[in-house]
Amino acid sequence: MFFFNKFSIYYNVISLYFLSEEIQSALKKADLNALSEIRMRVGFPIFGIFNGKKIFLSEKGPTINKIDAINCSHIDIKKCIESVTEKSLYAFNDRLKQGFLTTKDGVRIGLAGDCVLDGEKIITIKNISSLNIRVPHEIKDCAKKIYDKLFLKEIYNTLIIAPPSKGKTTILKDLAKKFNEYTNYSIMIIDERGEFSNISGENIDLIKFSNKFYALNYGLRSMSPQIVITDELQTKDDWQSAKTAAFSGVKIIASCHGKNIKDLINKDFFLKNVFERYVVLDALKSAGTIKEIYDSEFNII
View: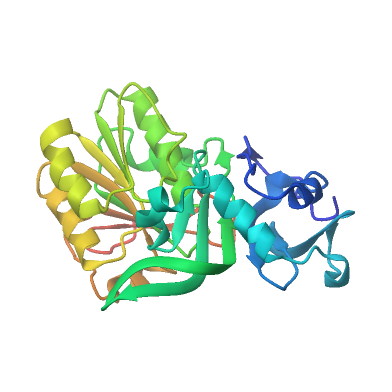
């Protein structure tokens, strides 16, 4: 395809079974290795992000011409939601009201619609009109440079920093595999959104669909981990959970949105002295490319 990246190292593309036959047919003509995101908005052309570029989906295949693109309908949205939830929205409502669903293969689907309130509490989301489908890829050894540089001799409390959709989760997955394969540490993954569903191993315990605060507090007692891996520290509770792990003698490896170290330090809930190493990724290069590594005092090492 004209947008194919010959340097791509993606493999093992996740199934997109939940999409309509028309959309799946269009995707069969595309390079799924290059696809990172699909956007569906009712009444507008469906497009994907291929190697960072916006490409529309059509019956004939990928196109830059939106006139030929498949328009998203309410039926397309309904098909997707029903497939993921197996036609039981009630069973998935705890996730739905947080603005996302996750497939059995770990594909995260963000959604937008009408929030239904009970007082100030959101009880569900209905009339869903937009979907943001994040297409995960396994990238072989994308965390090798980070692992070799930081974890060969000892384990540091480490925070991976990069803007959204720049491979933080992919790197955490690869790190989990490497710890499982090369060490005997007991690893606990706190997976709030079900994105680590395809990660398993003899040394890995996976807690899914729980907030970090609850999962960490019960996981520390019941599973006795030595390493905790979790994604996207955002809230005050997230940062307090990371601090709890670090101050409990457990090593924590996590990620956080940010462009650089200054961006991180200026975050409302940032806590110093939790992490011993900060890895800033190069957002302009392939997943796992290190831009800078800082110690606990923010000195470049």
